Amino acid sequence: MAYIKIFPIKITDKKAMDYIMNPDKTDEKLLVSSFACSPETADIEFALTRKAGKENVMDKGDNLAFHLIQSFKPGEVDATTAHTLGKQFTDEVLKGKYEYIISTHIDKGHVHNHIIFNATSFRDYHKYVSNKRSYHKICKISNRICQENGLVTSMPKEIGGRSYKENMEYQRGNSWKAKLKVAVDKAIWTSVNYDEFLLKMKLSGYEIRQGKHLTFRAPEQKNFTYMKSLGSYYTEESVQERLNRNRHKTVYPKNISREVRLFVDISAFIESGNQKKFETWAKRNNLKQAALTFNYLSENNLLNYERFQQHIEDMSEAVHLCEEKIDILDSKISHQQLLQKQCDAYRKCRRIVRDGKCAPDPQLYKSRHLSEFQLHDILKKQLSEAGITKIPLPEHLARELDQLENKKNSALLELHKLENQRNTLEVVQSNFSLMLKEHDITKSEAATPEL
View (cartoon, rainbow, N blue to C red):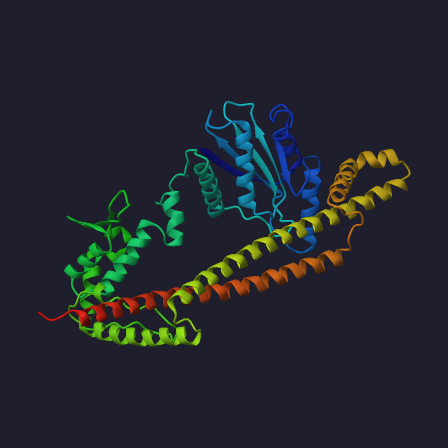
């Protein structure tokens, strides 16, 4: 399992970096890695990014950097594996937006990673926001990575009356309570008495326990959930009142679109009370959707079922290719932004190096700007290895970045359009299948001789 701690660095990040890169703790720095910076000059590169953030009026708060610690259970992983998992974890948390250095310490009874990352993003100069929500998010990422690699996960303790897992899932509407609320609302909407409501909940897959208080349990849920724990709107008295209101009115879905929608499964509703009127509406709706489905198939020359299936496969492939295109553009944008950062830093360091040649005491000048001289040499080597012999103009780099971002925006619009078309096809496919099924049943009944 991995325990997570994070705290801000407000005064100096250099001392913290020197501590986590201690050769005695990191196997002579073999367990030290970095992203978008060099471990030897990370403090200078962090400072240059923060300065650029201030120049772009994006600098908020007084945090210089953040120190993140990921600790593993004694004997659970070796140092190399812990370092690999730590890099995967950090890359996923920071998403290529912040410079960082990571080191794995082996001097104690348990292996642990130290990550120091810049508080300012070198990509958009926004500050990293550290709060309870972001903390639980990074804990979730760490737990998932541990689980994927066969390690036991450890969730943070309860906060605000909910466990970490429940709190995160509740925000998405995926917790047991959130799902139960949806199921209860749906059952009440389609019922007119208490017994019908309970039957609908049972048909939805919930196990019911009626005692002093009404409780439900989903198929894979461990414990029962009390209705009263969902809030005052879901107490047994409130449920009865909502059911009583249903007796005096017929509820129809509103804002019916002219787009093709799924057929209403009438058999899923029990005929009682005002459900007769609902059944009438549902039959009319299905006839309307059948007409819209037929029109869609006819207009797109897809009345042949095999051709229609091939069209669905082609659409799914188009969505997949568009997603791959966006991933490639994301990678190019990240690379371009990193190159832009390196070129900007190299220009500033090169200016300092050139000024040193005209200084009254070049040796004294160099000793005072040793980090900038060292960063200059590192960046020059990195750019040379990347095949860049002449530093591009800032305007040229910015123009290329704008072109990539425009291509990505166009690809995102295309993806949105394709996904909408795919969703429509899925609805049409469902309706088409039901139409064929009903046709086969009718044909079979017509061919059956009367007894």
